[in-house]
Structure formats: C-alpha cells, structure tokens
Image (cartoon, rainbow, N blue to C red; front, side, top):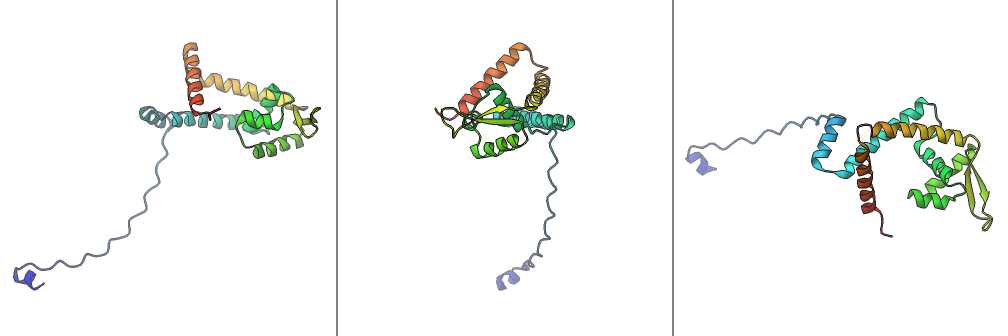
Length: 182
C-alpha cells in the first residue's frame, strides 16, 4: 500500500455489489415454419418426425373433439387393432404396439366397461381372453378411420405418388434402424 502511495497511484475502491440480474425473458415460441426450416438445416431426423407427429396428433385431437367422439387416439388405435385382428389377446396387442402391457390392460378394461370390446375365453386355455369389437365399436372405428384417411391425404397432398413411396420406404428404413435386435 505504501508503495502505491509513493508512486502516486491511489488504490482502487472496492467495487460496489452488482445489482441482481433481471430474470431472462421466456423464449418466444418458434413458429412452425421456422422450426421446420431449422430442423431441415440441422438434419435432425427424429425431431422432424416428432414435429410431424405432433401436428398430426393435434389435428386428430381437434377432429375427435369437434366430432364429439369419446375415444382418445390411442383407444381408436386399440379398436383398430382388434378390428384387424378379431380374437387377438392383450399380449398380442402389447407385442404389436410395443407398449406397456399394464397400460394397455387398463385401457382395454375401460373399453370393455364402456361396451366397446368384449372378451371370450380361449378354448385351449381358459385363462386367456380373446378380444373382439362389440356393438357400437365398429361404427366408431369406421368413423375414426375415415377421419384418419382424410388427415393422411391432407398430409401427403403435396407429394407425388413416387415421393409418397420414397417417403414410406425411407421411414421403414428409419424404423428398422431403431427396432430392437430380434
């Protein structure tokens, strides 16, 4: 300190405590077109697929709500499975959908309680239940499939037949790359 005074330099005063920083403003939502452009530029395939599915599911939910459907998209897919595979089991549904069997058991139980699925015991093993569409489920399934076809057509409206085939082939390759080893 004495050396600093002798040289004519005065010691610096202690710095005042800094004011607390203002909280950062929340990030503004990214417009879908800007997001799609960024994803394309970054080459993030999974983010691109997620973005498309997010938009599709949102439109499915709105269509179901507008049509006053009482089914969720997952319930609709479960009914679709049993429409295509009458007499299939819960285990077969779980293997096909790659979803948790417990979650599916609760969902199937709810569909049975609402009278949309019926169970019959397997003739070879009475512990196994074979599931079938019941009553109004067929009409609800057909209405869901009509709505899904319209959405699929809208999604692919700007693609030629060749581009649609290419897209489906590329998505099959992505799915195969992500599938667990057999």
